[in-house]
Length: 214
Image (cartoon, rainbow, N blue to C red; front, side, top):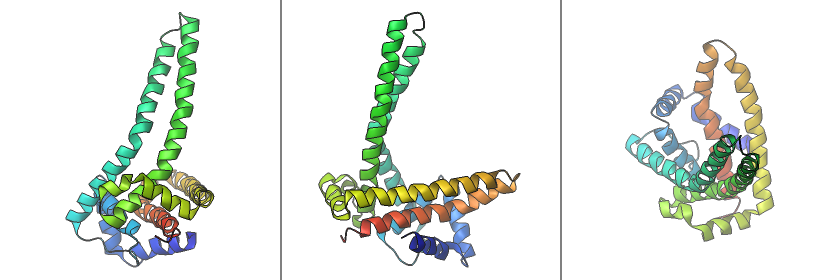
């Protein structure tokens, strides 16, 4: 899947300089058209689709952003309580017992945040692909279908595949950090490589979904 995703991202830009420029423009426009392009990738279009139909790209990009935001709401709410408890604890320096209670609550909220973020993250990826495949935003929250898909993939296989992607992202992050040290040029290179990198990542996620055979 890694080699296929790399070849897919390479096919999207190498030798297609105008398409690469259009992807850069899509990134500059608040990333919304780029998100719309990634919907095409999640749809399973192969080879890498053309950057066209800008109206559709904007609409699909906005829909995918809203879907991601809705999935993130539970984690954001818990993080809000964590932040509030942290601030409350720091403001109670004169009352050690209240301070300890507030900070203990903050720790509980932090643990809960990571748990909820992990669960919603696993579900939201499959939900995003269901949206891309069906065109229905409601399908992005079809818990029964999402759980059935992950069950067909295998929870262990699914999590291991994502861990592999995280490791690759970590390595890419280190490389980009080194590149960023180059004055001026480093930032430009990072920007130019952003679209191919996310295309690689989304193609990889798409293949995980396809492993379910749905």
